[in-house]
Amino acid sequence: MTAADAIVLAGGRASRMGGVDKPAIVIGGRSMLDAALAAVARCPRTVVVGPHRPELDARIVQVREVPPGSGPVAAVGAGLRALGPAPAPLVVVLAADLPFLSQATVTELIRHGSESGADAVFAADESGRPQYLIGVWRRTALAAALDRLDSLINQPMKALIPPDTATVTMAGIADCDTEEQVQRARMAWDTGATRPAPQAAVSATPLPLDEARDVLRANISRLTEYRAELGSVRGAALAAPLTAVASLPRFDVSAMDGYAVAGDGPWRLRRDIGFAGGRRPVGLLPGEAVRIATGAHVPDGTTRVLRDEFARIEHDEMLYQHEDSPLRDDIRRRGEDRAPGDLIAPAGTPVTAGLISAAASVEVTDAVVRGPVRARIIMTGDEIRSTGPLQTGQTRDSIGPILPDVLSWYGIRAIDRVHLRDTPRGFDEVLGAAHDCDLLVIVGATGGGAADQLRGAIARAEARILVHRLKLRPGGSTVVAELSSGTTVLGLPGNPFAAVAVLMALSPALVEGRTGSHPSRPLIGPLRNASAISGPATRMVPARLAPYGGWLGDPQIRTTHLGGLIDRDGLVVVPAGATDDDLVEFLPLRV
Image (tube, rainbow, N blue to C red; front, side, top):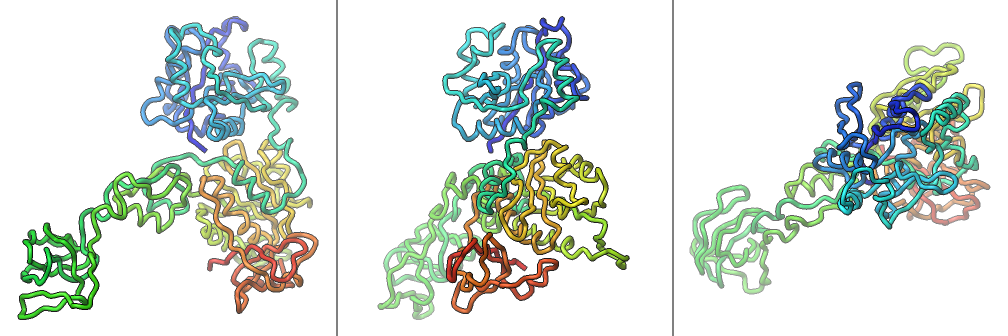
Protein backbone atom coordinates (compact mmCIF):
# COMPACT_ATOMS: atom_id res chain seq x y z
CA MET A 1 0.00 0.00 0.00
CA THR A 2 1.32 3.42 -1.01
CA ALA A 3 2.47 5.77 1.75
CA ALA A 4 0.29 8.78 2.59
CA ASP A 5 0.92 12.06 4.41
CA ALA A 6 -1.91 13.68 6.38
CA ILE A 7 -3.52 17.12 6.60
CA VAL A 8 -5.86 17.58 9.59
CA LEU A 9 -8.12 20.65 9.43
CA ALA A 10 -8.51 21.93 13.00
CA GLY A 11 -9.52 25.57 12.48
CA GLY A 12 -12.68 27.20 11.22
CA ARG A 13 -15.16 29.42 13.01
CA ALA A 14 -17.63 26.76 14.31
CA SER A 15 -20.31 29.44 13.88
CA ARG A 16 -23.14 26.93 14.43
CA MET A 17 -21.72 26.22 17.89
CA GLY A 18 -21.11 29.80 19.01
CA GLY A 19 -17.48 29.98 17.90
CA VAL A 20 -16.14 27.31 20.31
CA ASP A 21 -12.88 25.44 19.66
CA LYS A 22 -14.65 22.47 18.09
CA PRO A 23 -11.59 20.18 17.65
CA ALA A 24 -10.95 20.45 21.42
CA ILE A 25 -14.41 19.11 22.36
CA VAL A 26 -14.02 15.85 24.30
CA ILE A 27 -16.13 12.83 23.30
CA GLY A 28 -15.43 9.37 24.65
CA GLY A 29 -12.55 10.58 26.82
CA ARG A 30 -10.54 12.26 24.05
CA SER A 31 -10.79 15.41 21.98
CA MET A 32 -11.97 15.17 18.40
CA LEU A 33 -8.55 16.44 17.30
CA ASP A 34 -6.91 13.60 19.22
CA ALA A 35 -9.26 11.16 17.45
CA ALA A 36 -8.16 12.51 14.06
CA LEU A 37 -4.47 12.36 14.98
CA ALA A 38 -4.85 8.79 16.24
CA ALA A 39 -6.48 7.84 12.95
CA VAL A 40 -3.46 9.12 10.95
CA ALA A 41 -0.80 8.02 13.45
CA ARG A 42 0.86 5.77 10.88
CA CYS A 43 1.29 8.52 8.28
CA PRO A 44 4.95 9.56 7.97
CA ARG A 45 4.11 13.33 8.03
CA THR A 46 1.14 15.10 9.58
CA VAL A 47 0.22 18.77 9.32
CA VAL A 48 -2.46 20.31 11.58
CA VAL A 49 -3.99 23.48 10.13
CA GLY A 50 -5.49 25.79 12.72
CA PRO A 51 -4.65 27.79 15.85
CA HIS A 52 -1.33 26.82 17.41
CA ARG A 53 -1.70 24.12 20.06
CA PRO A 54 1.40 23.81 22.28
CA GLU A 55 0.29 20.44 23.64
CA LEU A 56 0.76 18.66 20.29
CA ASP A 57 3.73 16.40 19.60
CA ALA A 58 6.70 18.38 18.25
CA ARG A 59 6.85 16.08 15.20
CA ILE A 60 3.46 17.39 14.03
CA VAL A 61 3.79 20.46 11.81
CA GLN A 62 1.36 23.25 12.72
CA VAL A 63 0.35 26.00 10.27
CA ARG A 64 -2.46 28.50 9.85
CA GLU A 65 -4.47 29.26 6.72
CA VAL A 66 -4.20 32.88 5.51
CA PRO A 67 -6.26 34.72 6.47
CA PRO A 68 -7.38 32.71 9.54
CA GLY A 69 -10.86 31.31 9.12
CA SER A 70 -10.83 31.57 5.33
CA GLY A 71 -12.34 28.16 4.76
CA PRO A 72 -11.37 24.53 4.20
CA VAL A 73 -9.84 24.99 0.74
CA ALA A 74 -7.44 27.65 2.02
CA ALA A 75 -6.60 25.34 4.92
CA VAL A 76 -5.91 22.41 2.59
CA GLY A 77 -3.63 24.64 0.50
CA ALA A 78 -1.69 25.74 3.58
CA GLY A 79 -1.39 22.13 4.74
CA LEU A 80 -0.12 20.88 1.38
CA ARG A 81 2.56 23.59 1.25
CA ALA A 82 3.69 22.69 4.78
CA LEU A 83 4.26 18.99 4.11
CA GLY A 84 7.80 19.75 2.97
CA PRO A 85 10.32 17.77 0.93
CA ALA A 86 10.22 14.08 -0.02
CA PRO A 87 6.42 13.91 0.09
CA ALA A 88 4.36 10.74 -0.07
CA PRO A 89 2.34 10.20 -3.26
CA LEU A 90 -0.98 10.20 -1.37
CA VAL A 91 -2.44 12.78 1.04
CA VAL A 92 -5.10 12.08 3.66
CA VAL A 93 -7.36 15.11 4.26
CA LEU A 94 -9.47 14.98 7.46
CA ALA A 95 -11.61 17.34 9.45
CA ALA A 96 -11.08 17.33 13.23
CA ASP A 97 -14.78 16.87 14.07
CA LEU A 98 -15.12 13.09 13.61
CA PRO A 99 -15.31 11.47 17.06
CA PHE A 100 -15.75 7.90 15.80
CA LEU A 101 -13.00 7.95 13.19
CA SER A 102 -10.57 5.01 13.47
CA GLN A 103 -7.17 4.15 12.09
CA ALA A 104 -8.76 1.18 10.32
CA THR A 105 -11.01 3.60 8.39
CA VAL A 106 -8.04 5.67 7.24
CA THR A 107 -6.05 2.55 6.37
CA GLU A 108 -8.91 1.28 4.22
CA LEU A 109 -9.18 4.63 2.43
CA ILE A 110 -5.43 4.65 1.75
CA ARG A 111 -5.66 1.13 0.35
CA HIS A 112 -8.47 2.17 -2.00
CA GLY A 113 -6.53 5.31 -2.93
CA SER A 114 -3.43 3.34 -3.85
CA GLU A 115 -5.27 0.62 -5.78
CA SER A 116 -8.22 2.40 -7.45
CA GLY A 117 -6.30 4.79 -9.72
CA ALA A 118 -8.80 7.57 -8.91
CA ASP A 119 -7.56 11.10 -8.21
CA ALA A 120 -9.40 11.08 -4.87
CA VAL A 121 -11.28 8.55 -2.74
CA PHE A 122 -13.84 9.75 -0.17
CA ALA A 123 -15.68 8.03 2.64
CA ALA A 124 -19.44 7.88 2.18
CA ASP A 125 -22.18 7.37 4.76
CA GLU A 126 -24.83 4.66 4.51
CA SER A 127 -26.97 6.83 2.24
CA GLY A 128 -24.06 7.14 -0.22
CA ARG A 129 -23.36 10.81 0.53
CA PRO A 130 -19.60 11.47 0.24
CA GLN A 131 -17.71 13.20 3.05
CA TYR A 132 -15.26 15.44 1.24
CA LEU A 133 -13.33 16.05 4.45
CA ILE A 134 -12.63 12.33 4.92
CA GLY A 135 -10.62 11.48 1.86
CA VAL A 136 -7.37 10.35 0.30
CA TRP A 137 -5.99 12.32 -2.67
CA ARG A 138 -3.25 11.73 -5.14
CA ARG A 139 -0.89 14.55 -4.28
CA THR A 140 -0.50 15.63 -7.90
CA ALA A 141 -4.28 15.78 -8.34
CA LEU A 142 -4.74 17.83 -5.17
CA ALA A 143 -2.01 20.28 -6.16
CA ALA A 144 -3.53 20.62 -9.64
CA ALA A 145 -7.01 21.23 -8.19
CA LEU A 146 -5.65 23.99 -5.94
CA ASP A 147 -3.74 25.57 -8.84
CA ARG A 148 -6.88 25.72 -10.96
CA LEU A 149 -8.61 28.09 -8.52
CA ASP A 150 -8.08 31.83 -8.88
CA SER A 151 -8.38 32.20 -5.09
CA LEU A 152 -8.49 29.70 -2.22
CA ILE A 153 -10.23 32.04 0.21
CA ASN A 154 -13.79 31.10 1.29
CA GLN A 155 -14.11 28.41 -1.35
CA PRO A 156 -16.28 25.31 -0.64
CA MET A 157 -14.61 21.89 -0.75
CA LYS A 158 -16.72 20.99 -3.80
CA ALA A 159 -14.63 23.51 -5.76
CA LEU A 160 -11.65 21.16 -5.38
CA ILE A 161 -13.28 17.86 -6.28
CA PRO A 162 -11.80 16.38 -9.50
CA PRO A 163 -13.93 14.46 -12.04
CA ASP A 164 -12.16 11.15 -11.35
CA THR A 165 -13.22 10.21 -7.81
CA ALA A 166 -14.40 7.12 -5.95
CA THR A 167 -16.36 6.62 -2.74
CA VAL A 168 -16.24 3.88 -0.11
CA THR A 169 -19.20 3.37 2.21
CA MET A 170 -17.97 3.27 5.81
CA ALA A 171 -19.33 3.30 9.34
CA GLY A 172 -18.17 5.70 12.04
CA ILE A 173 -17.78 8.80 9.86
CA ALA A 174 -20.48 11.01 11.39
CA ASP A 175 -19.27 14.57 12.09
CA CYS A 176 -20.32 17.03 14.81
CA ASP A 177 -21.42 20.46 13.56
CA THR A 178 -23.93 21.38 16.27
CA GLU A 179 -24.31 21.11 20.05
CA GLU A 180 -27.10 18.60 19.52
CA GLN A 181 -24.83 16.37 17.42
CA VAL A 182 -22.13 16.56 20.10
CA GLN A 183 -24.60 15.45 22.77
CA ARG A 184 -25.86 12.61 20.59
CA ALA A 185 -22.28 11.52 19.91
CA ARG A 186 -21.49 11.48 23.64
CA MET A 187 -24.58 9.40 24.38
CA ALA A 188 -23.75 7.04 21.51
CA TRP A 189 -20.18 6.64 22.74
CA ASP A 190 -21.32 5.86 26.26
CA THR A 191 -23.73 3.19 25.03
CA GLY A 192 -21.52 1.92 22.22
CA ALA A 193 -24.48 2.25 19.85
CA THR A 194 -22.68 3.98 16.98
CA ARG A 195 -19.05 3.14 17.57
CA PRO A 196 -17.38 1.55 14.58
CA ALA A 197 -17.71 -2.23 14.64
CA PRO A 198 -15.25 -3.40 12.00
CA GLN A 199 -15.83 -7.04 12.76
CA ALA A 200 -19.62 -6.90 12.41
CA ALA A 201 -19.55 -7.60 8.68
CA VAL A 202 -17.14 -10.54 8.99
CA SER A 203 -18.77 -13.92 8.66
CA ALA A 204 -18.19 -16.39 11.48
CA THR A 205 -18.11 -19.18 8.89
CA PRO A 206 -14.68 -20.89 8.90
CA LEU A 207 -12.55 -20.00 5.88
CA PRO A 208 -10.68 -22.54 3.75
CA LEU A 209 -6.93 -22.14 4.06
CA ASP A 210 -6.40 -20.64 0.59
CA GLU A 211 -9.21 -18.11 1.11
CA ALA A 212 -7.76 -17.11 4.47
CA ARG A 213 -4.38 -16.52 2.85
CA ASP A 214 -5.98 -14.37 0.15
CA VAL A 215 -7.77 -12.30 2.80
CA LEU A 216 -4.49 -11.67 4.62
CA ARG A 217 -2.61 -10.71 1.47
CA ALA A 218 -5.33 -8.33 0.27
CA ASN A 219 -6.85 -6.85 3.43
CA ILE A 220 -4.17 -6.63 6.06
CA SER A 221 -2.59 -3.19 6.58
CA ARG A 222 0.80 -2.53 5.04
CA LEU A 223 3.72 -1.53 7.22
CA THR A 224 5.11 1.99 6.88
CA GLU A 225 7.76 2.53 4.23
CA TYR A 226 11.22 3.69 5.31
CA ARG A 227 14.79 3.75 3.99
CA ALA A 228 17.24 1.25 5.46
CA GLU A 229 20.55 -0.49 4.87
CA LEU A 230 19.66 -3.65 2.97
CA GLY A 231 22.00 -5.80 5.00
CA SER A 232 20.07 -5.03 8.19
CA VAL A 233 16.54 -5.78 6.97
CA ARG A 234 16.44 -9.36 5.69
CA GLY A 235 12.81 -10.42 5.72
CA ALA A 236 11.62 -6.99 4.57
CA ALA A 237 10.35 -6.26 1.05
CA LEU A 238 11.15 -3.47 -1.36
CA ALA A 239 8.56 -0.69 -1.24
CA ALA A 240 9.85 0.81 -4.50
CA PRO A 241 11.77 -0.51 -7.51
CA LEU A 242 15.53 -0.83 -6.97
CA THR A 243 17.75 0.46 -9.78
CA ALA A 244 21.49 0.34 -10.40
CA VAL A 245 23.68 3.31 -9.49
CA ALA A 246 26.88 2.10 -11.18
CA SER A 247 27.71 -0.07 -14.18
CA LEU A 248 28.46 -3.77 -13.84
CA PRO A 249 31.22 -4.37 -14.69
CA ARG A 250 32.40 -0.84 -13.91
CA PHE A 251 35.02 -1.13 -16.67
CA ASP A 252 36.14 -3.69 -19.26
CA VAL A 253 37.61 -6.66 -17.37
CA SER A 254 39.12 -9.99 -18.27
CA ALA A 255 36.68 -12.89 -17.99
CA MET A 256 39.49 -15.45 -17.79
CA ASP A 257 43.09 -15.94 -16.74
CA GLY A 258 45.16 -15.46 -19.89
CA TYR A 259 46.57 -12.66 -22.07
CA ALA A 260 45.21 -9.33 -23.21
CA VAL A 261 46.18 -9.01 -26.88
CA ALA A 262 46.03 -6.27 -29.50
CA GLY A 263 45.39 -7.17 -33.12
CA ASP A 264 46.10 -10.47 -34.82
CA GLY A 265 48.82 -12.78 -33.53
CA PRO A 266 51.44 -13.74 -32.98
CA TRP A 267 52.11 -11.16 -30.25
CA ARG A 268 55.17 -9.93 -28.47
CA LEU A 269 54.70 -10.64 -24.78
CA ARG A 270 55.44 -7.79 -22.39
CA ARG A 271 56.78 -8.39 -18.89
CA ASP A 272 54.12 -6.49 -16.92
CA ILE A 273 51.05 -8.28 -15.55
CA GLY A 274 47.49 -7.11 -14.88
CA PHE A 275 45.89 -8.25 -11.61
CA ALA A 276 42.31 -7.78 -10.39
CA GLY A 277 42.33 -4.73 -8.14
CA GLY A 278 45.89 -3.90 -9.13
CA ARG A 279 47.34 -1.22 -11.34
CA ARG A 280 46.01 -1.26 -14.89
CA PRO A 281 48.67 -2.15 -17.47
CA VAL A 282 49.61 0.61 -19.90
CA GLY A 283 47.95 0.51 -23.29
CA LEU A 284 48.77 -2.14 -25.85
CA LEU A 285 50.17 -1.44 -29.30
CA PRO A 286 49.15 -3.67 -32.21
CA GLY A 287 51.00 -6.97 -31.95
CA GLU A 288 51.54 -6.67 -28.16
CA ALA A 289 50.21 -8.87 -25.35
CA VAL A 290 50.27 -8.72 -21.56
CA ARG A 291 49.59 -11.37 -18.91
CA ILE A 292 46.24 -10.73 -17.20
CA ALA A 293 44.19 -12.28 -14.41
CA THR A 294 40.43 -12.81 -14.18
CA GLY A 295 38.73 -9.59 -13.15
CA ALA A 296 41.63 -7.32 -14.05
CA HIS A 297 41.03 -4.07 -15.95
CA VAL A 298 42.12 -4.70 -19.52
CA PRO A 299 44.55 -2.12 -20.96
CA ASP A 300 43.60 0.31 -23.70
CA GLY A 301 44.03 -1.17 -27.17
CA THR A 302 42.95 -4.68 -26.10
CA THR A 303 40.97 -6.44 -28.81
CA ARG A 304 40.35 -9.66 -26.89
CA VAL A 305 41.61 -11.90 -24.10
CA LEU A 306 43.30 -15.16 -25.08
CA ARG A 307 42.69 -17.66 -22.27
CA ASP A 308 45.56 -19.78 -20.97
CA GLU A 309 44.39 -23.09 -22.44
CA PHE A 310 44.34 -21.61 -25.95
CA ALA A 311 47.84 -20.05 -25.74
CA ARG A 312 51.44 -21.13 -26.09
CA ILE A 313 54.63 -19.15 -25.63
CA GLU A 314 57.78 -19.63 -27.67
CA HIS A 315 61.24 -18.31 -26.90
CA ASP A 316 59.88 -16.75 -23.71
CA GLU A 317 58.62 -13.70 -25.59
CA MET A 318 56.26 -14.64 -28.42
CA LEU A 319 52.63 -15.58 -27.81
CA TYR A 320 50.69 -17.82 -30.21
CA GLN A 321 47.13 -19.16 -30.31
CA HIS A 322 46.66 -22.90 -30.72
CA GLU A 323 45.56 -23.60 -34.27
CA ASP A 324 42.51 -25.69 -33.23
CA SER A 325 41.22 -23.34 -30.51
CA PRO A 326 38.08 -21.23 -31.05
CA LEU A 327 38.17 -17.48 -31.54
CA ARG A 328 36.68 -15.98 -28.36
CA ASP A 329 36.50 -12.50 -26.86
CA ASP A 330 36.59 -13.32 -23.12
CA ILE A 331 36.19 -9.69 -22.08
CA ARG A 332 33.32 -8.59 -19.86
CA ARG A 333 32.43 -5.20 -21.29
CA ARG A 334 31.55 -2.21 -19.10
CA GLY A 335 27.83 -2.25 -18.23
CA GLU A 336 27.04 -5.50 -20.05
CA ASP A 337 25.32 -6.90 -16.93
CA ARG A 338 23.90 -3.65 -15.53
CA ALA A 339 23.94 -0.03 -16.66
CA PRO A 340 23.07 2.89 -14.35
CA GLY A 341 19.30 3.04 -14.04
CA ASP A 342 18.74 -0.62 -14.91
CA LEU A 343 16.15 -2.42 -12.79
CA ILE A 344 17.66 -4.68 -10.15
CA ALA A 345 14.36 -5.78 -8.62
CA PRO A 346 10.76 -4.50 -8.67
CA ALA A 347 8.77 -3.30 -5.67
CA GLY A 348 7.54 -6.23 -3.61
CA THR A 349 10.76 -8.25 -3.94
CA PRO A 350 11.80 -9.78 -0.59
CA VAL A 351 15.16 -8.67 0.80
CA THR A 352 17.29 -11.81 0.58
CA ALA A 353 20.99 -12.57 0.40
CA GLY A 354 20.72 -12.64 -3.38
CA LEU A 355 19.11 -9.21 -3.53
CA ILE A 356 21.66 -7.72 -1.12
CA SER A 357 24.51 -9.09 -3.24
CA ALA A 358 23.01 -7.97 -6.55
CA ALA A 359 22.43 -4.47 -5.17
CA ALA A 360 25.94 -4.16 -3.71
CA SER A 361 27.47 -5.11 -7.08
CA VAL A 362 26.02 -1.90 -8.58
CA GLU A 363 26.80 0.33 -5.58
CA VAL A 364 23.34 0.17 -3.97
CA THR A 365 23.40 -0.48 -0.24
CA ASP A 366 20.08 0.96 0.96
CA ALA A 367 16.50 1.06 -0.25
CA VAL A 368 12.93 1.99 0.67
CA VAL A 369 11.43 -1.07 2.34
CA ARG A 370 8.59 -2.34 4.48
CA GLY A 371 9.43 -4.68 7.35
CA PRO A 372 10.73 -6.99 8.49
CA VAL A 373 7.71 -7.97 10.58
CA ARG A 374 8.43 -7.77 14.33
CA ALA A 375 6.54 -10.26 16.48
CA ARG A 376 5.80 -10.69 20.17
CA ILE A 377 5.01 -14.25 21.26
CA ILE A 378 2.42 -14.68 24.02
CA MET A 379 2.14 -18.10 25.65
CA THR A 380 -1.05 -18.50 27.68
CA GLY A 381 -2.32 -20.71 30.45
CA ASP A 382 -1.64 -21.16 34.16
CA GLU A 383 -0.69 -24.78 33.50
CA ILE A 384 2.29 -23.86 31.27
CA ARG A 385 5.76 -23.64 32.81
CA SER A 386 8.92 -22.78 30.89
CA THR A 387 11.63 -23.45 33.48
CA GLY A 388 12.00 -25.06 36.86
CA PRO A 389 10.32 -28.14 38.34
CA LEU A 390 6.70 -28.83 37.42
CA GLN A 391 4.07 -28.58 40.11
CA THR A 392 0.85 -30.57 40.25
CA GLY A 393 -1.30 -29.85 37.21
CA GLN A 394 1.48 -28.08 35.25
CA THR A 395 2.95 -29.02 31.90
CA ARG A 396 6.15 -28.04 30.14
CA ASP A 397 6.11 -25.30 27.51
CA SER A 398 7.30 -27.37 24.55
CA ILE A 399 6.65 -24.90 21.73
CA GLY A 400 7.37 -21.41 23.09
CA PRO A 401 11.17 -21.87 22.88
CA ILE A 402 11.03 -22.96 19.21
CA LEU A 403 8.55 -20.37 17.90
CA PRO A 404 11.23 -17.68 17.30
CA ASP A 405 13.02 -20.16 15.04
CA VAL A 406 9.85 -21.07 13.17
CA LEU A 407 9.01 -17.38 12.67
CA SER A 408 12.53 -16.71 11.39
CA TRP A 409 11.97 -19.21 8.56
CA TYR A 410 9.58 -16.65 7.09
CA GLY A 411 11.62 -13.53 7.83
CA ILE A 412 9.67 -12.61 10.99
CA ARG A 413 11.76 -11.30 13.88
CA ALA A 414 10.64 -12.30 17.39
CA ILE A 415 11.33 -9.32 19.65
CA ASP A 416 10.29 -11.07 22.88
CA ARG A 417 8.32 -13.96 24.36
CA VAL A 418 6.12 -13.64 27.44
CA HIS A 419 3.80 -15.85 29.48
CA LEU A 420 0.27 -14.64 30.21
CA ARG A 421 -1.61 -16.01 33.20
CA ASP A 422 -5.32 -16.77 33.01
CA THR A 423 -6.86 -13.55 34.30
CA PRO A 424 -10.14 -11.84 33.36
CA ARG A 425 -8.51 -8.81 31.69
CA GLY A 426 -5.03 -10.03 30.88
CA PHE A 427 -5.64 -10.04 27.13
CA ASP A 428 -7.01 -6.49 27.24
CA GLU A 429 -3.66 -5.33 28.63
CA VAL A 430 -1.70 -7.32 26.05
CA LEU A 431 -3.71 -5.92 23.13
CA GLY A 432 -3.57 -2.39 24.52
CA ALA A 433 0.23 -2.50 24.76
CA ALA A 434 0.81 -3.98 21.29
CA HIS A 435 1.70 -0.71 19.58
CA ASP A 436 5.42 -1.53 19.64
CA CYS A 437 5.20 -4.66 17.48
CA ASP A 438 3.73 -5.58 14.11
CA LEU A 439 2.45 -9.03 15.00
CA LEU A 440 1.15 -10.64 18.19
CA VAL A 441 1.44 -14.43 18.08
CA ILE A 442 -0.83 -15.71 20.84
CA VAL A 443 -0.81 -19.43 21.59
CA GLY A 444 -3.93 -20.74 23.31
CA ALA A 445 -7.23 -19.21 24.48
CA THR A 446 -8.79 -19.24 20.98
CA GLY A 447 -11.49 -21.87 21.61
CA GLY A 448 -14.69 -21.60 23.59
CA GLY A 449 -13.61 -22.86 26.99
CA ALA A 450 -13.78 -21.01 30.29
CA ALA A 451 -10.15 -19.89 30.04
CA ASP A 452 -10.32 -19.05 26.32
CA GLN A 453 -10.76 -15.29 26.53
CA LEU A 454 -8.89 -13.98 23.49
CA ARG A 455 -11.96 -13.49 21.28
CA GLY A 456 -13.71 -11.43 23.93
CA ALA A 457 -10.68 -9.17 24.30
CA ILE A 458 -10.49 -8.76 20.51
CA ALA A 459 -14.14 -7.68 20.47
CA ARG A 460 -13.60 -5.20 23.32
CA ALA A 461 -10.61 -3.73 21.46
CA GLU A 462 -12.87 -3.19 18.43
CA ALA A 463 -10.32 -4.97 16.28
CA ARG A 464 -11.03 -5.73 12.64
CA ILE A 465 -11.37 -9.50 12.32
CA LEU A 466 -9.81 -10.86 9.14
CA VAL A 467 -10.13 -14.61 9.74
CA HIS A 468 -12.75 -15.74 12.24
CA ARG A 469 -11.91 -19.44 12.04
CA LEU A 470 -10.24 -21.87 9.65
CA LYS A 471 -11.85 -24.75 7.83
CA LEU A 472 -8.87 -26.92 8.69
CA ARG A 473 -7.81 -29.80 10.94
CA PRO A 474 -6.04 -29.26 13.21
CA GLY A 475 -6.18 -25.49 13.73
CA GLY A 476 -9.84 -24.66 13.19
CA SER A 477 -10.01 -22.27 16.17
CA THR A 478 -7.38 -19.93 14.68
CA VAL A 479 -8.33 -16.23 14.63
CA VAL A 480 -6.60 -13.32 12.85
CA ALA A 481 -7.50 -9.70 13.60
CA GLU A 482 -6.08 -6.20 13.23
CA LEU A 483 -6.00 -3.70 16.08
CA SER A 484 -6.56 0.02 15.62
CA SER A 485 -2.82 0.47 16.22
CA GLY A 486 -2.21 -1.56 13.04
CA THR A 487 -0.82 -4.57 14.90
CA THR A 488 -1.88 -7.96 13.56
CA VAL A 489 -3.15 -10.51 16.10
CA LEU A 490 -2.62 -14.17 15.21
CA GLY A 491 -4.42 -16.38 17.71
CA LEU A 492 -3.21 -19.99 17.46
CA PRO A 493 -4.66 -23.09 19.11
CA GLY A 494 -2.94 -24.24 22.29
CA ASN A 495 -2.36 -27.67 20.81
CA PRO A 496 1.38 -27.76 19.95
CA PHE A 497 1.18 -29.42 16.55
CA ALA A 498 -1.83 -27.34 15.50
CA ALA A 499 -0.08 -24.11 16.55
CA VAL A 500 3.09 -24.85 14.59
CA ALA A 501 1.21 -26.19 11.55
CA VAL A 502 -1.04 -23.12 11.29
CA LEU A 503 1.93 -20.82 11.86
CA MET A 504 3.73 -22.47 8.95
CA ALA A 505 0.64 -22.27 6.75
CA LEU A 506 -0.24 -18.61 7.42
CA SER A 507 3.10 -16.89 8.06
CA PRO A 508 4.01 -16.34 4.38
CA ALA A 509 0.64 -14.69 3.66
CA LEU A 510 0.93 -12.56 6.81
CA VAL A 511 4.35 -11.32 5.74
CA GLU A 512 3.19 -10.74 2.17
CA GLY A 513 0.22 -8.73 3.40
CA ARG A 514 2.18 -6.60 5.83
CA THR A 515 5.25 -5.95 3.65
CA GLY A 516 3.62 -5.97 0.21
CA SER A 517 5.98 -8.69 -1.00
CA HIS A 518 5.07 -10.86 -3.97
CA PRO A 519 3.15 -14.06 -3.11
CA SER A 520 5.52 -16.97 -2.65
CA ARG A 521 5.31 -19.90 -5.03
CA PRO A 522 3.83 -23.00 -3.34
CA LEU A 523 5.64 -26.33 -3.45
CA ILE A 524 3.26 -28.72 -5.21
CA GLY A 525 3.67 -32.41 -5.80
CA PRO A 526 1.91 -35.80 -5.62
CA LEU A 527 0.89 -37.28 -2.27
CA ARG A 528 1.46 -40.97 -2.86
CA ASN A 529 -0.77 -42.25 -0.04
CA ALA A 530 -3.46 -39.55 -0.02
CA SER A 531 -6.36 -42.02 0.24
CA ALA A 532 -5.00 -43.28 3.56
CA ILE A 533 -4.98 -39.75 5.00
CA SER A 534 -7.78 -37.69 3.49
CA GLY A 535 -11.14 -37.24 5.16
CA PRO A 536 -14.15 -34.93 5.05
CA ALA A 537 -12.07 -31.79 5.82
CA THR A 538 -8.70 -30.40 4.78
CA ARG A 539 -5.90 -31.73 7.00
CA MET A 540 -2.24 -30.92 7.66
CA VAL A 541 -0.03 -33.89 8.52
CA PRO A 542 3.72 -34.56 8.76
CA ALA A 543 5.28 -36.02 5.62
CA ARG A 544 8.56 -37.29 4.25
CA LEU A 545 9.93 -37.32 0.72
CA ALA A 546 8.88 -40.42 -1.24
CA PRO A 547 11.70 -42.47 -2.84
CA TYR A 548 10.65 -41.60 -6.41
CA GLY A 549 9.35 -38.07 -5.92
CA GLY A 550 6.36 -36.63 -4.17
CA TRP A 551 5.54 -37.23 -0.52
CA LEU A 552 4.29 -39.82 1.92
CA GLY A 553 2.08 -38.46 4.67
CA ASP A 554 1.58 -39.90 8.15
CA PRO A 555 -1.87 -41.47 8.50
CA GLN A 556 -1.73 -41.22 12.30
CA ILE A 557 -0.35 -38.28 14.28
CA ARG A 558 -0.29 -37.21 17.92
CA THR A 559 -1.01 -33.48 18.14
CA THR A 560 -0.24 -32.86 21.81
CA HIS A 561 3.51 -32.65 21.09
CA LEU A 562 5.86 -32.22 18.15
CA GLY A 563 7.33 -35.70 18.21
CA GLY A 564 5.59 -36.42 14.92
CA LEU A 565 7.95 -33.98 13.19
CA ILE A 566 11.05 -36.00 14.05
CA ASP A 567 12.63 -37.43 10.89
CA ARG A 568 10.04 -35.71 8.71
CA ASP A 569 10.73 -33.27 5.88
CA GLY A 570 7.67 -31.08 6.32
CA LEU A 571 3.88 -30.99 6.32
CA VAL A 572 1.40 -31.66 3.55
CA VAL A 573 -1.95 -29.90 3.15
CA VAL A 574 -4.37 -32.72 2.26
CA PRO A 575 -7.64 -31.58 0.64
CA ALA A 576 -10.88 -33.26 1.63
CA GLY A 577 -11.45 -36.47 -0.32
CA ALA A 578 -7.97 -36.56 -1.86
CA THR A 579 -6.92 -39.75 -3.63
CA ASP A 580 -3.51 -41.31 -4.21
CA ASP A 581 -1.11 -39.18 -6.28
CA ASP A 582 -3.29 -36.08 -6.11
CA LEU A 583 -1.21 -32.90 -6.15
CA VAL A 584 -0.96 -31.27 -2.72
CA GLU A 585 0.95 -28.41 -1.12
CA PHE A 586 4.12 -29.17 0.84
CA LEU A 587 5.37 -26.94 3.69
CA PRO A 588 9.05 -27.71 4.32
CA LEU A 589 10.61 -27.88 7.76
CA ARG A 590 13.65 -25.62 7.61
CA VAL A 591 15.71 -26.94 10.50
